[in-house]
Length: 353
Image 1 (cartoon, one colour):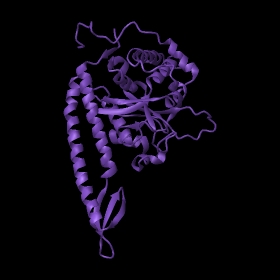
Image 2 (cartoon, rainbow, N blue to C red):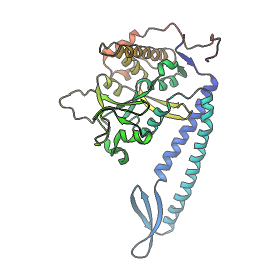
Image 3 (cartoon, rainbow, N blue to C red):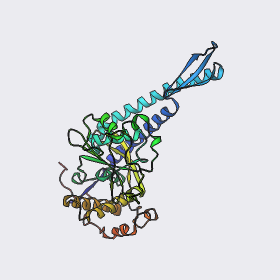
Image 4 (tube, one colour):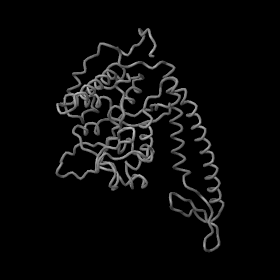
């Protein structure tokens, strides 16, 4: 029995339409934030003359005394902001219209809470810079790249693994995030999130959904000065160091637009599917790993390798962009033998009830 199913032409068309609408929405929001955030107003100075001021954050900056130029700036700012807000509102409405269609067509894939966490991190500019999504949730990216749906058994997950790249400059993070860090962000999404241990790497909500913050083992443990958390808050999560994660941090990245369970789009960054497959196969050989996890690791490694072999043939395990991975790890690619099945469901005579 096939472990993945090809998307129909209608599903692909619907996904493309939604992705395009989402890309325009993102670009419009970015333009609004860059050009029209804050406010602009006239203020009377001590000499009794009106001056134009622009507020960004909590800072007011003078743009000069009232003149033809500053009046034009004032008019363009307010009219431009109004037009920008109207555009964003229309695009948001378009995504609302597309969402139920996406659900009905079976395109909603990413668990809702996972999607909300990723969107919050993306809004702060952390996805693809300080954080990558790893583990089972990366499969949502790979299946979209291959235009298939992977069987639900391999995708079942009640957690999200966040890989921290400690090379990121924490000073670039918004102050409202850096004060409480990752645990503060999680509690804004679901107030029931709590760390499972002091200075621990894992948080859970009342339903048992887990968020793990992980990072690679440093090259020199004794001289390690790398960051392990996003804030100085005593309750914030502290990333746990795990062997082998440096391969994922240093691998090429993959990012596409996917759909959450409600049919709304999102995008996130994860390791290249080749690095994922090799890392998962390596994990499946670890004697110190839980037996059930080893089995799942190998299944996920082989299904991703099958997608690469049959549907992502532009990706080669011998390519130069994988040279940052150890040779011993790249050698494992020889164990990905062709599977006896394909993604063709043309002989399936019963619906997927």
